Structure formats: C-alpha cells, structure tokens
Length: 57
Image 1 (spheres, rainbow, N blue to C red):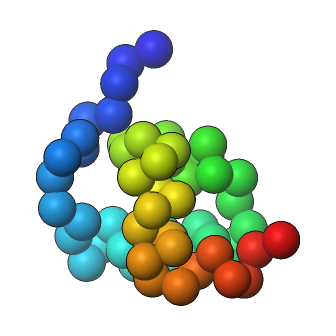
Image 2 (image 1 turned 120 degrees about the vertical axis):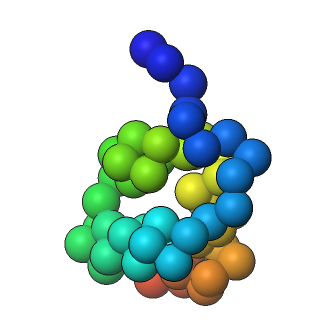
C-alpha cells in the first residue's frame, strides 16, 4: 500500500470541504484519510481544528 500523497502539504479549500462532507456523512476515518490521501493523524487533527469531532461519537 502506498503512503499518503499529500504528506506535509497545506489543506486546500476543496480538501476541507470534502472533509466536512465526509464527516457529515459519518464516513469512517480510514476511508476519509484514503479519499483525502492523508494520514489518519492528519485527518483527525484537522477535524479537531475545525470543530468537527464534537459531532462524532
């Protein structure tokens, strides 16, 4: 399996919009990371920064 393509790259507006959409749909974190081509830690950190984690249980 190849590693994340966007390692150490800035989040684009499109990345953030997709992250918000996938969180709204309650997509599993691993799938979110794969779709965004980012690490699981990067996805979880950005979601926390955006206040999205409060919506998930």
